[in-house]
Image (cartoon, rainbow, N blue to C red; front, top):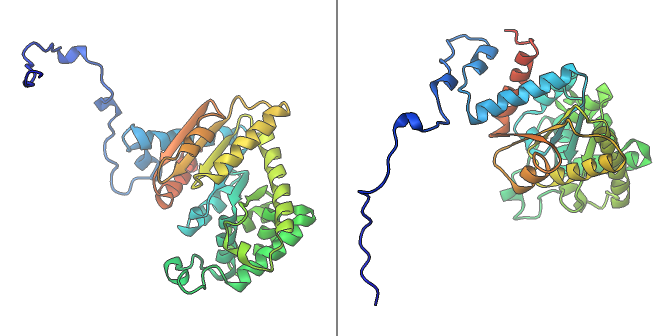
Length: 313
């Protein structure tokens, strides 16, 4: 039988003077609070130089630097960006020539089109899933079916949805409509069976697949010239990180250099695929800005404008 275990005697433990210890935190990285009425640039400068605030400033600096150099800056986005009202933020960045291309998932295209169509989107799933109404809105499905048909003819799904949204009452709030109007690459990457419109008999999956194949190859062309640029994954935990990994492989397989590419991930929490397939494996430098899109995206926009010297009252 073993002896009873006694509490450990700490009397012989070694100590060291404070001056012998290295530190992660010092007041040199503190910042005085911004004064009332300060400019956005001054407010951003007042954020302590740690963690999320440092990542936000670093990302804004990279975007500004690469924009000045004329490089590609791509935002790859999930639907939540639209659903929390950040479409106008992305539209503004495209209007200013800062964001040069976008890649989105199927749900993004649906919600973005509905915003352009009615100024509203996102049904109450907990209610409609119980009585068979969930996902059965007629107008959205018909619009996506028509876009798939036109997109399969050569223009791709993203451009077809965007061109359709241009004619709708609230087109100014639509990211895809803005991209279509500006002539920017806008690609939609659909996982079949995941979007509500896939249930509708009006949708031809073969046409949708062909339209999205065109988009995939267009996105590959964008990434092939991404050297010196930046790819920001915003609110997609699985689909678009996987797409990005394949696009990088295509570019490098065809001999395109991607040594100087920064990748960023903006989401509400960390995920394996975003850590590995966006800011990890494909690039030498990755930046993570974790938090709510409706806070971080407007902040990032203003930080970029401040870095570009466009921080005006």
